[in-house]
Length: 278
Length: 136
Image 1 (cartoon, one colour):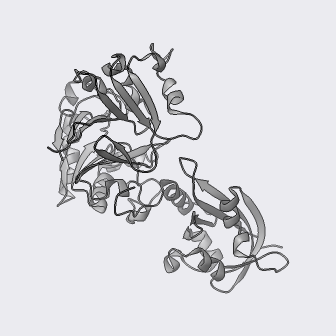
Image 2 (cartoon, rainbow over the protein chains, first blue to last red; image 1 turned 135 degrees about the horizontal axis):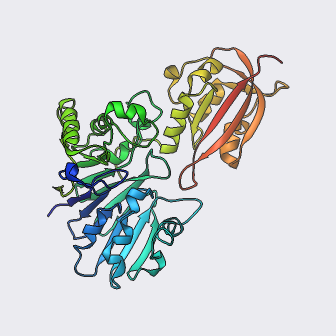
């Protein structure tokens, strides 16, 4: 048995369903990880989480790890079916803050007038946690959270199950403020999370030309995702957080271009519905 | 992190270095132990040496190489160096000092030093910014 990684939403910024986005999907960030012992962890609660929630038929423990609280990463929370079933136990983890607890921050969305149901009214046993800045365990998964460069407090995750490791950095701008992508691992955001990972799921929102117009928005050129993967020795790179303006054809071209400039690194298109065994 | 490579600095330090790299204000960054991690190009002129020639400098080495004196000419002990005070007492510090650079030249300046607290509120390092006083 290996770790199973399922992509339920790979789109960035805003859901973008339509005939031109069928292959990569329109749902926003959501990745389900199932450990060898059956532990379930869901990475981010974008609109993709709605369909994941419908797959759990029996009450169980589920951990949702949020990278940050931008809307495209939490919008699906209110539509996560296990929230509304009494015997489920749901743990939600989010970036730490020195000013407000996670409940207070999430409640800004999960309360009227933005949402009809309040967080305190969910039926499941709900526990909220600040992500610790040291390794922690969820079932059989050992998890590291570390801050990464993205506007607001944003965490990237590294999860290890036995000898298999995945890294998840869906919103990340490691080149911010640098003259191109940094080359020194000590001064590169996300390096340690990605180091040697068997599967790196990473922000690849922009082409080089687009990035030039959007420096500081918190996202990567696909070339920067490739550079980080190569620097950190990741084995496979999954492109993620696709720009809502990019259709399937453009995303295929971006992946093909990235493959041409990076021999030796396996680059996989982050398509909704894809499942990886690690 | 349990990752064996452990190469990377805290993201707060990375962002601070990137900011310092783009500033005209001489700026120096230390880690939470006081080891000097980076100084920018304007600080190179003030310190009398290029960063690429020094690399990281241990706390004790830095204060012995870059001698600081107060306006009366008294040497500033290591524990009173503004960036060390800022990190120890978690407060901003501002002082007028005279520094003898790695090149042996004395320069008058004001230093503002402050601690850097990371996302969880813990100390990750300190920053010193220098304003040279060319006219006394």
